[in-house]
Image (tube, rainbow, N blue to C red; front, side, top):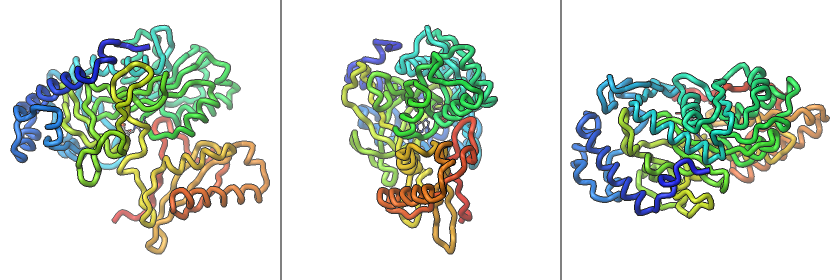
Amino acid sequence: MIFDIRKETLPREEIEALQLRRLRDMCARVYANVPFYQKRFNEIGITPADIKTLADLRNLPFTEKQDLRDYYPFGLFAVPRENIVRLHASSGTTGKAVVVGYTARDLENWAEAAARSLAAAGVSHLDTVHVAYGYGLFTGGLGAHGGAERLGATVVPASGGATRRQAMLLRDFGATALCCTPSYALHLWEAGQEVGIDFKELPLRTGVFGAEPWTEEMRHDIEQKMGINALNIYGLSEIMGPGVAMECVEAKTGMHLWEDLFLPEIIDPVTGEQLPPGEVGELVLTTLTKEGIPLVRYRTRDLTSLDYTPCCCGRTHVRITRLRGRTDDMLIIRGVNVFPQQIEGLLMEQRVLSPNYQLVVDRVNNLDTLEVRVEMGEHLFADEIGKLQTLERTLQKNIKEYLGVTVKVRLMEPHSIERSEGKARRIVDNRPKD
Ligand code: DLL
């Protein structure tokens, strides 16, 4: 179902005309109201009036996460504080958190983007939507909640935690859609198993999963275990929260990025130059309607590509392909670039393993080492040692062949790797900080 048929199927020329108008207006607003942007524009000798076409975007300055940290907490806000009606913040494991402020109109636009996203997953006012993204400063819970309410669905604001109880609520309330991280979906499924709930027998049919990287292999595993359609949703706090882009249930390939609200580019993360459609690089987003904290050319650090080919669902908004990783999640192991998702794909090929894994990086005698810890499935656990050793060797060989890096694979007992209630922690980096 398309939430707003007119906006979501605009012809390309109309999308671009709208984007240009909104880009000029947004730049004029930040130039007038945010000293940081006025300074940046002046430094490169450009004013908002110089923006004549969308191609001029490439002349505008980038914004980086560090800029948001430097101006912590409210330094990049573009409206008086009394116009801000909500604050969110990213968890930020390192350094200061990043704080974002929303005006009432920002919240309306966010709810609309999230509603479009849920509708793209096939969710409607007839559904019961169980939201197990965390509620709080994290944007996941309230973001998905706002979208589900805007759709007119019944929302179950479960948040993260009390996982067994949540599995029971899913059964008792008959939720038809589940919003959470893919790793938490698996955690819920496991908890269900423990209390005798078979997800396949529940009315649940749709998963709206995101906030962390996951692979196609992980999708198949979840779909098969839970008997649902698992769809990918993308977003980030700096730009808005969940609902920046969403996969449609019709094509299930790539996430439509709501182009009337956000202007995407893909750049080479090293040179900063724009890359043509289809090439993988860093996603850069410019907000087109945001009032509280509009951002010009925000470097997301997420690696993906843009797909402008027509989609069978009828939506005309560009699709971003499944995220390949973050530039700052890339491990460099003895000179070889490794993204956790690449290893996840190889692990998930082995049906006997559980999808719970962790990559432990260390430094031994000045050399980086990578240990891949992955839990065995319950059946495998009972098997004899010899079989397990063969499997470890096979995985080591596959990883060496595909990624060119020598790793140690360690099969772990079921349930021995910590479960997360939000984003899974896939990398444990024990290397000394230089
Ligand atoms: O994770 C917002 C969100 C909530 C998105 C619920 C989707 C669902 P942050 O905590 O600021 O915001 O983290 C944003 O998470 O830059 C990506 O690196 C990663 N991420 C988000 N969605 C996906 C996805 C929320 N579908 C960061 N696939 C982003 C891969 C994702 N990575």
